[in-house]
Image (cartoon, rainbow, N blue to C red):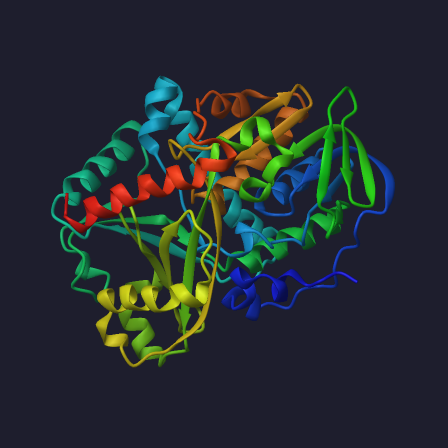
Length: 430
């Protein structure tokens, strides 16, 4: 008997997303040995997107996952579908004249998400619009400089400057802001389950509850699970923060950073509508950022509280509620009904880390909080590379990364020291 990870894991037990979906029957675990053109490890956004595009090109595809589709970050995140990268300056500095082409891929990623919602009739509550806001006067020039760079260097026409963020958000906390009319937000688990359904309908074979124990490299890689094995011509590793020691050569280039979200009880529709104009997604530009949005059923979803240590979301919930009330004190009588969390795969420079371990083994990781949309185009360019058109994949694979210091034993303490440094700076207003 397989234990249901939704009931067994405290990080996901009180998830609003899980409470508002009906999952299909579990995909069966992998039993015995099978063959496929491509094996994909991970049934999240990037793995399922890769599988969909590979099937469209005629490849046979098997997806294996340690849990079930959408169990990891793809089913727990803030739901913000964004253009760009978590650190656009790194991409611009490292790729030079080709940075515009890379940034264009991130715009295509949001377009692909919109396209798939329509093509596969995925009911995932998509709402267009995204607002980045500054909480301190010193952050306003930084925000304006980012907007100018994106408009001028990347030729992105969907941004507008707000001298007063209060034009769009009923909060005194924020100063200026940048509004992006093309990005948006979704119910991420609904979207992920929709991708999984589309993949199955296209002929992708998904095996849940099949954790990978070992990868054997070679002309025909073998992916060994607890009860079976997949022999394949190509392998795509898309486990991100959950991949663990299966991918030691590049896993130490990402840090699993915990992030937490609370969802309020349902509010009166008038109150919900008054908080954020047009119900767009909002995020500040602090190092330890807050992000929030109003759901289609009139709840406020409020996230943040990044940490490298394991924490029970129920313990974090009061802290997030206080942060929520610092933004919207008018919600003091509104209760928090859900609290959950998970891990984001963050690179040291917060740029995506795509590459090859061998000519026939690809990996995708390091989305650093921008994975809702970017994973889709990552899957597409990986499928193109496997099919022989590697230009776009090789462009993003040029981004250089450093290992997270500290090794397996001391990585978290080292990261926590860095976090402490930034917490002190923000507390002092530096």
